[in-house]
Image (cartoon, rainbow, N blue to C red):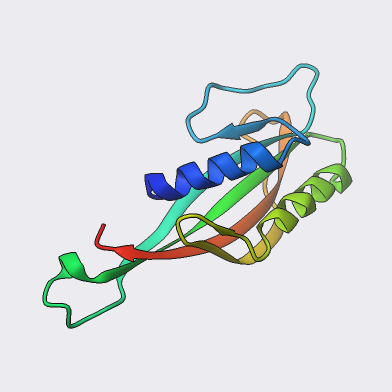
Length: 139
């Protein structure tokens, strides 16, 4: 999972800027709408936390780079096709293209891909992945 700084920035951004469907974040209470409808399960995770500056005398005064991704799983009811989920994933992707969130979280590559049937068989995910990075003083 990502640092708390990145998670909170992404959660606040999506909550304020995406209102097309319910958003569910990591470890939120279970969500299964009745009747089944589109919703978005969102994960914010960290790929690496690496030192990027040398010669400062101590890793504690060095510059560190955190990299990760936001994955928005647009959950479509099984058997309803992909078009509505694809439209929603595209809308989410447009939110992240060129985005910079405070403090210095920069989004670069964005992907849309299909997932596999959900754990309960009632939903099928269309995934939007937005990769990000930020640099900061020692963690």
